Image 1 (cartoon, one colour):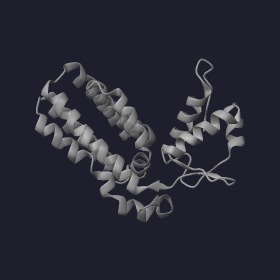
Image 2 (tube, rainbow, N blue to C red):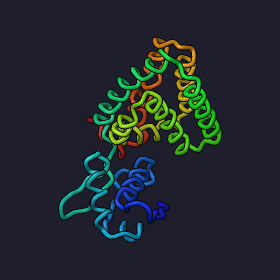
Image 3 (tube, rainbow, N blue to C red):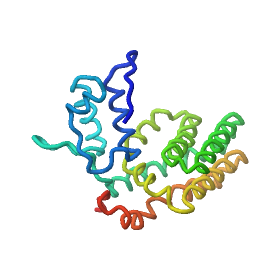
Amino acid sequence: MNFTLDNTRHAAPQVLEALRAAIVSLELAPGSALDRAELAQRFGVSQTPVRDALIRLGEEGLVVIRAQSTTQVSRIDVPAAREAHFLRRATEIEIARQLALAPDPDVVAALAAQWARQAELGERKDYPAFIAADKEFHRLMYLAAGLPRLWSVITRMSGHVDRLRLLHVPTAGKADAIMSGHQAILDAIAAGQPDAAQQAVRDHLTGTLAAVDEIAERYPEYLILN
């Protein structure tokens, strides 16, 4: 976990961002022990921002904090992932409709450019960067709809979904399916077809959770199924 403290910013949010990114990217795998003193030394900070970050991550369900015991990265909670996914899908269906009702050429161009960047990462099989580019495509939709704070809420709730997706993306054909889904959303928005845009989002945001059983077979130690 590489980390360089930006002295122009408070330490606590930087530690939180770095730990969340390491957990969501599976650099810190489910079950990994998190020692507060060791993390403080690694980040070059006192234990206070580390403690605060772990508390926040505990609230997000990404770590399990046990009194007088080891703090660990949580296993992937599939029921929590389903709840977060339900909220995201319902939200993005309406965002896609809004964007398609009044297509903005600048928005379409930004989405198309992001699609191209993601396609390049997919070809290189750089899956962590591919997932980050995937999230950026969706973030641009929220920004275009004037809903940046809602994206922040979705992001905080989506740690379990994001980890499932990273386990699923290397599956043969998954990256291509994601790109096809983004292309369908982009095409419908650009063409001013709100119904098609909504259906494209529905189709796009189904694959990972539909594959939970397959993921559980490959990574049984990572998942909490119920």
